[in-house]
Structure formats: structure tokens, C-alpha cells
Length: 155
Image 1 (tube, rainbow, N blue to C red):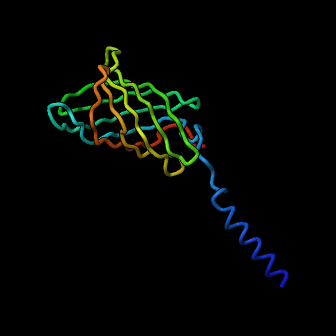
Image 2: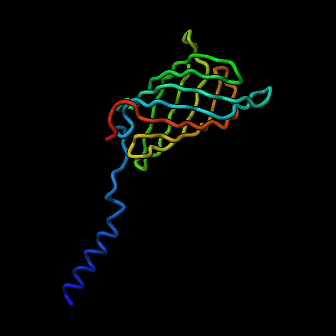
Image 3: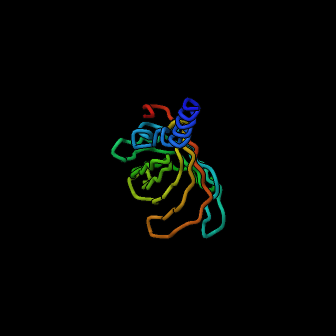
């Protein structure tokens, strides 16, 4: 009877400890370079416009972000650079505050993008929460981001 109780106690311990055995995400999980695509719709004052973008973004251990993208909004093409900050939560959700600049270095917009690190930090799935133009005008959007790690290691 004692061995059965011991096995039951060990089994109960492992069952209860199971969730805590999973590694939590940190800034090291996200650190590295990702290639990404953004697709969806931007709600302009003149009506909805399709959006597509491809680019590369690098996340540093300290949360600093840098990157570039080529994008089209309603057929208008532009090269843009990105700076910002990334917050990584233990549950692997992320929040990116992205400042986007035109090829002359002028701020075009600031976006808050919420997402999740998946596949052990090798991929990101995200959606735009806010998009605010440099003049302070907020635009509605239905924009999603898919990103795949191209350099660096998930920790």
C-alpha cells in the first residue's frame, strides 16, 4: 500500500508541477532577425485600401527594434524604415511600438502591434492594435503580420 501511495504522490506532484516546467519567454526568445509580411486593409478617410508589406526586423536583447519594409497601400508603393521597442511577456505574447519613417527620415506613423511568439520563438503571429499618423490622426486597420526567424537563436 505504501508504494501505491508514493506513486500516487509523485504522479500528483508531476501533474501539478507540469505547467511550471514549461520555459517562459524572455527578450532572449525574440532576439534576432525576422522576415515578415503584413497584409490586410487600412481604413482611410476616403474608404478602405488594401495593404501589403514585406520586410526585415531585428529585435535586440534590450528591446530595441530596427528594420525596413517595402509596402503598398492602395497601390502607392514606398520604402520605409522602422525603429521602436519590443516588450516580451512570460506567456510569449509581445507588444511592439513601431515608429515608421519614409526614405527621407520623416516620421510617417506610429503603430502598436500585438502578437505571440510561436514554434519556440521561430515565428511571430501579430495584429495591429493602433495606427496613428504623424499628424495625430488615428486610422482603423485590419492588418496581420506573419514573421519567420532568419537569423539569431531563440533562447
